[in-house]
Length: 217
Image (cartoon, rainbow, N blue to C red):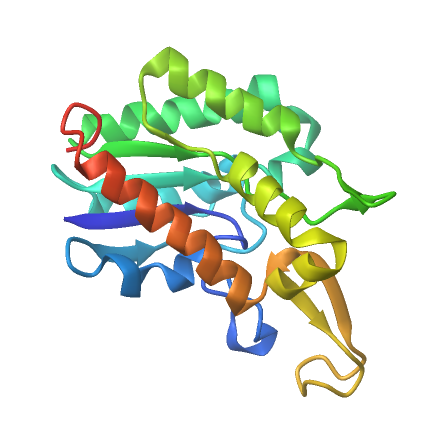
C-alpha cells in the first residue's frame, strides 16, 4: 500500500535551507513503514488550485492505484485567495480531488488544516475555522474518512499553553542557527518536534481506519 500526501508546507518536506522547519509528512514514514510507503508530494505555498496547476496532482494520480490511500490537507494558502474561499472554490476543488482519487481505485482521507499557533490574551484563537468546517461538511456529505487535525492541534496548543506550545514551532534566537542568523518566530511552520507530534496523530488515525474495512481499504 502507498500513502500519498497532497498538501502545503505544513505537510511537505521543507527544503534544507529552511531547516529545522518540518512538515508533518516528513515525519510520517517511520511511523507507518510496516504497512505503507509514504510518497509526500506536498509543497510549500500550495493551494488546492496551484497543486493541480503545477502538475503535482497529476503526478500523484499517476502513482495512486487500488489499495492506496491519499491524504488531502490544504487551507493555509487557499485562505489567501478570494476565489478559493472555504465554502466555494476550496470545497469544489477538494470534491473534484475526491472523485479523481476514487476513479483510480484509491481511498481518499480528508484532513482539516492544522491550526496556527495564535494566542490572543492568553487564549489559542482559531485562524482556519471556516476551512476546517468546510472539510468536516464535505467528509460527512461524501462519506469520506476524516482526520480532524484542526481540532487536535488546537487542543495540543491549548494544553501546552502559550509558552509551552512554542516548542512545536520554528522559534529561534538571533545567532542560534546558521540558516536563520537574525532569528525567527514562526507560528505556522512546525519544528521537528511539532511535525513529529502531528505525524503521530496521523499514524494513529490511519491505524484506526485500517481496522475499519468499511472506511478504509
